[in-house]
Length: 355
Length: 274
Image (cartoon, rainbow over the protein chains, first blue to last red):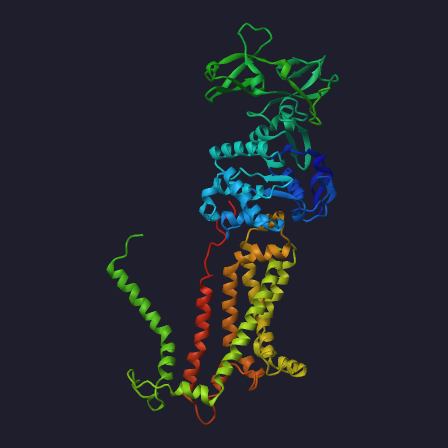
């Protein structure tokens, strides 16, 4: 049985439609990440699942039950808010107790659950403190603890790491992943950070302007992006894109031309966009006949790798090469694209041309 | 800032002392006159050392039922304060949370209730209360004072509710609480300083009010403020009793403000979000 199902879910504020018919099935125990830039409708979608926003159209079910008209309190979900939303007039323990009170459990059960959760999250020494006396990371953990004590059917996370500094973010991200493995609860997680999405998700839902662009495993969305948006949004540095045209079975852009890999379906004269990840641009030998001339404009050293800002013909591209192979700016080198890793999209629709 | 020099300190404290004297002078006059024997009350220059007498206080409570008037004042002031803070908070919460383009007009309309010159409505009130048989009852005053106190509370509390992050209410609703419980357990406790401020304003207004109390009460529901003025008659002004009564009237207000003061702390919502 699926844990959460969205069928053609629409959200409108007056005349403005912000979520356009989202279809999504989340299986029990799955970790699903809603990923997209600000304003793509991912948080609104999450809030509809939580019951904090009405569903304007479509059907939303949790655990097989349609919940469109159920109040948040009756949905059996727990949520971790972006800004934590801890009750400031209560201690850490009281925050957790407060979340448990509506469940009307035995006092001993309540105490045990709180103690267990505090233990897992390392909150035990902080139980009598108030939120104001906690650091950002500690507040984050209390917010998770408050959600965890209720042992909900579904966890909702709304950009839970966005208020943490980089180091803490990595640590808490790791902890969330570990917690999910341990608890096995269904998770719906919203973020604009692709690293969070790639590392945590079983399934990524990439959204733009209220539409779902692609749903897939991290490997799928990285290796087989269905649209130019997904192609450029996933991966860092972003995929290089070149506009061109199909001429005599080849993709031709100003100054360069490529054979079309067999997995793409194109028609003569079609306007296409070619995508190539920076790591798939390799430095070639100077006598390599199939290679292209590239002038190195800027070199960025990153430790293990280096990024080369290249000018190939009239196109600007980024290549990611081993740091040892980096080249002084101003020099012209030969580069070869890994043709097996080329992506072709229809220039008009932005959709992949893969068969 | 540098550490203030001794000269600066002397200057500041002198200034404070002067301000304090100016503000405390009426209080001093009330207190000293209330225990001064009548014959030397208006002696010039005023006597700063005099035999203390309690006769005015004794007269106050034996010649007139002053304890009853104090009780009336308390019933009216506390009743109106409780009712106004309760109703005002609910109204303010609605105005603070409802997203509608005309909601500010509603808020302004509520505030406009306070813009009446009170004297303009005294006669209508008198006729209404006479008709429904509420003349000379504490309930009449509670109603009248609440019409002035509720708008004030609505406006004060709206500001405090605006400060309570809606994310906290959403968290509570996801945690399993309904609207009323969320308001009661989360929003209202976090707006406690606003409740204290509102209560102080409502209490002081109701406690001190004179005009309506004079017009709408007789012997039964008379409040202390009106009772004190009754010592001012056409043939004699009994200053000693007026002063004694005034001093007693001061006390509950001070106690109430001091009680509420511990809630007047800032930063209650600190640490809740971010």
